[in-house]
Length: 89
Length: 89
Image (tube, rainbow over all chains, first blue to last red; front, side, top):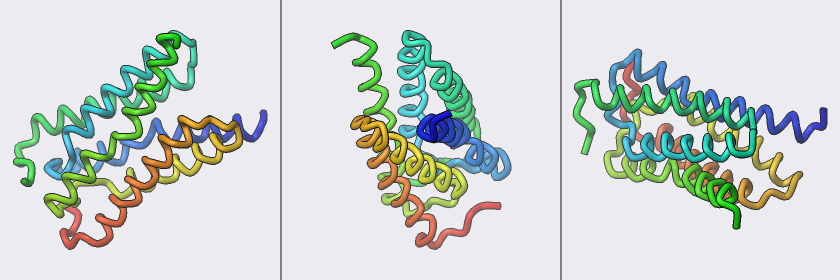
């Protein structure tokens, strides 16, 4: 396997797991006031766009990465909507 | 231009601007306790990996997107290190 191909896979894995620490921290602290809802909405929208793109070109790594990011960002949006803390203005 | 190509560009733009609302909110509220430092470290690491990948394959859109995300995540890491609020445990 070419080293660039390896870099691509490493990049995809890192991108996929990006939001795992954020989900764990939010779950532990039940505090998400500092998280930007607009950011999360952009993230989930971008994963839908990337999923349409990847399915049409049959790009399995992109499908897997963005499916994971979609689920994680959906969880964070759920936390934003359900945890009581008012966003800091 | 093929519609898949358009989706790719839309996805790249959305991915690039993901952290802009988070940077703006953090700057406004000076409160980043709920942001996961581990997430930010993964983000900035992944952008370095994607930049090495993109430079070696000459993928301009990936270079542009990840340069923007690199700068934005560096700003958020700076905010995490400098804003006084202790992370919520």
